[in-house]
Image 1: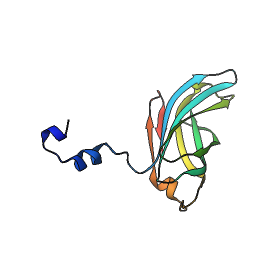
Image 2: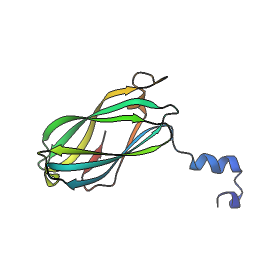
Image 3: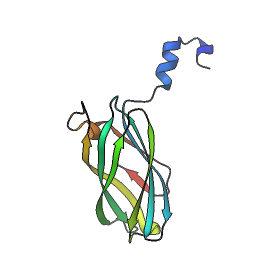
Length: 134
């Protein structure tokens, strides 16, 4: 459609190409038998695969206080592929959460991955009803 208004094909491709980096989307929260099941969509657009990715996450209660810190292991994240991951947060009811904060990158390893690259390139988005971000 943009080509139709006179933009060259290279400009059209540049507007649709995903940004380089690592993206985490908090997609859903669902009550589970043990607490709350949290669903993430992770997309690795770093240009290289990650052998291991893990994030330290702060969970905030309904009053806005920090409930606890947990480390979520996203395992390997292939380059250029979106991956859905679910984590069961035991003894944490979904309606007791007000915010999920990515506190730090606990692990980010792979061939050619620089120290701090995952945190520096990390972006977040949210489809849930609570706050999520860095």
